[in-house]
Length: 130
Image (cartoon, rainbow, N blue to C red; front, top):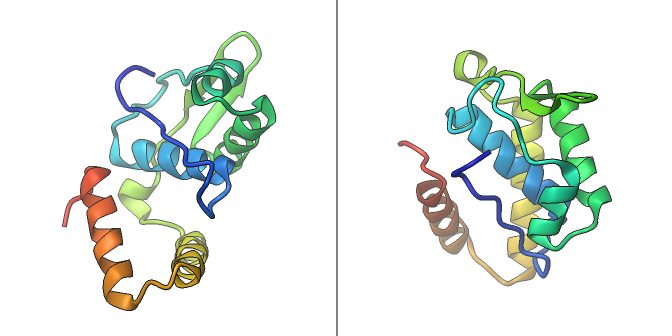
């Protein structure tokens, strides 16, 4: 994986493994990580991000459970497929992410306008299209 960078905010309300999972899933769904592209090893990504290997391993396990990556001994972890291009995002997963974000934003005292602005800005930074 060269190019797209994963960033983690350890001071934020979203657990680091979920930040990693969500960012890698977005890169896969958008096609910025191509089919069969190799991801960094758990140890390498953990070292790069300054996190425990278990944190990255959990993110990779969740990506594998969602059939977005495949891990093989000796072959590393590779992008398996990008299913959302044809079928759309999992509504339950999207709702859960929205619930988490909304709850965290409310604890910060954000109103609806601030939340929607933040989402639009994040969407733009992630390369989302309208």
